[in-house]
Length: 268
Image (cartoon, rainbow, N blue to C red; front, side, top):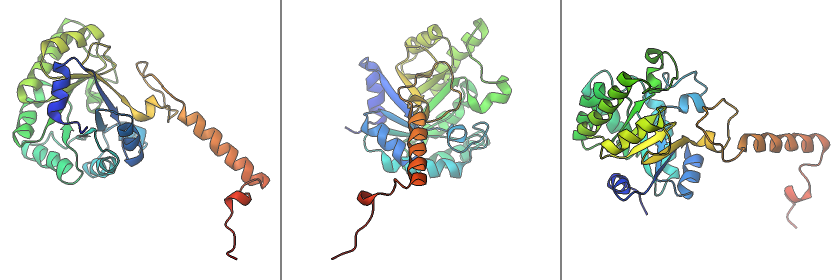
């Protein structure tokens, strides 16, 4: 069954947990979709995970469109969300709407995601008013890594807690259909989830959110990069891949591959 924005809202109301995976291309999106995932996010973390950038900041709109378009070919039922990259929505409301529209028009996304709370409320409202669904993102916002002083847990201390509660309420009021809570204490995530009506999707925010998200490459162990402590690896595809290539190298060098079964025969 095709997952839609209203269906995601209904899941929270009915107490059903939402699942989201961050994927960046046709094969990973196809795997996630076949597994029954609710939402596929084409995240700007493509910069770190796939493109080899040191952070998400260098990712461009053209790269976002390229990867979202590829993921769109792989999904059948999941809701597809494109992550707006750094400086694609901060300059002006007009540019934010235009870039969000590109994600739907050129890349077949069904919603966009952007980072920030109260300070981007007007932007969320403007994009939503253009009939483009918006997923918000508060807590640790990787595009603000330099302003935050690194990848640090947010929401510790009364002032930070109050700010994040205000951010959650602001993005809901602005029209966001859901909000990602990243790297915040579990009890604060529970409080936010119980305070606002839209679904919360946690990543490093404990078990009390409306749903959870992990990066595909992290949860299947497809990368040797260091991952945060909240990541659970469900497989070791990196290790399996290395072993497979090692066996290929060995068999080619020894003459074992290709054998008769893997060689074309002449027609008789």
